[in-house]
Image (tube, rainbow, N blue to C red; front, top):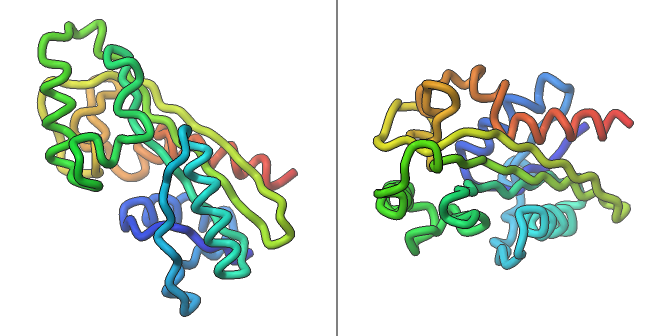
Length: 193
């Protein structure tokens, strides 16, 4: 089945394609099908609302089933921040360095046992007939004190799972435990049904 992915984030595109293609899906972008998706405003209050906004818009504009996700980091000591504002936590959308610096600053005096956090990913697939399938995935961890590793993106160098940051994981290791990997596995089960 051909499925459009509603993202221009090359890291998300690679991660979602890596997981969906072995399941038999042909993942395409708007450019692959000769259109340019509208950059919709993600004004939902939850990850699922934002994923749905993007998936419905992409499906409507392309006529294809469209998958979109919204994900972010939720830190317990910060009352769930940055949450749905993860990509623009420090003000500018997608400024990973500034977002990470703000996170470290806000956790400056927080002890190790209170640095618990989770990555959350909500996925929505919208179909041309108006139906949808949604799934969520979570990965528990904690926030480290310094950048570690050279892989990944966003908060990956600070998000610790066990004794490694996500940025120290290989792609395969990350896909096996990540919030997006877990959401896509859940989605796969739902789509089979």
